[in-house]
Image (tube, rainbow, N blue to C red; front, side, top):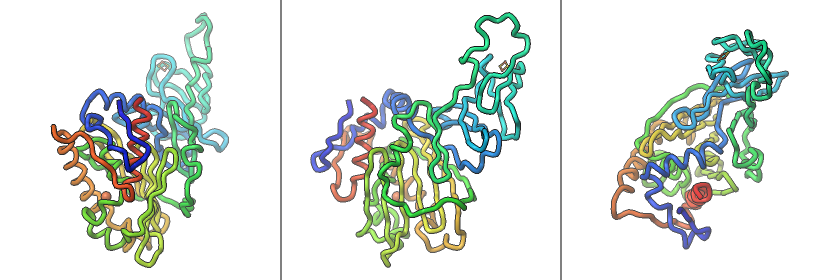
Length: 335
Ligand code: FES
Ligand SMILES: [Fe+2]
């Protein structure tokens, strides 16, 4: 259905139907997002039990992060009896007890006990334990998946050096933006610096457009913006399909793109700061202003791709490698 040539000079961009047709939106949930790694915060935020949801509004899977002997595990947060959500709020505990009929589980998800179940056959069985989900930790950040398309280590393998240590990062703000555009339009705009001189005048003064680079690896890509003095102004890491890690001299801004409808997405901005004194004057100083500029173009594209006269475009071989790589991954997953 979707095909994007590997040779960027011959390739055409994804057919516009991918963004407009409800069926493909549903297909992307199953074929892409249910197999993706989802960002679920920092490991040092998990003291004992912390409930969360994988990609709210789209994947919507309730999970429970639990600390067991120092390690974090990710469990299904749904009681194996009649399906109540087990833990509703972050808390400290030494076992998990369902608030509906009292079923108990150990912190690693094993069934422990259940009142009034004497005489029930083949009980308990492994199906009564809480399912444990694949979980990965990378630079203090946690990722979980229902059925990952690749091991997380393989997703970040062969990553060019980011030169960033995340030991002392603190979450200082979270923000949500509603964007009237398809999730992939938002991502593909992020994946090229081509538009910087046209769309982001203030950012263009900080980042030297001529030396901007893009490196692609199997499921990720890394863009680097340099300042006028040749120093690194920012590194922009994209992890397929919807995660953005922006490394600045002062810390990391993480963006999670959440599909809502084919023409609507929510983008979460989580700001993790290591050194507050460096924020001003850096490429990440005016994130809000840059975001408004990006949203305006992406929303304009959303209107444009519905046109009867637009089916697909072509790529700049020097400026759109990241977008080409992203479209190729979408085409691969949508088979
Ligand atoms: S739903 Fe949990 S004990 Fe009944
Ligand atoms: Fe932009």
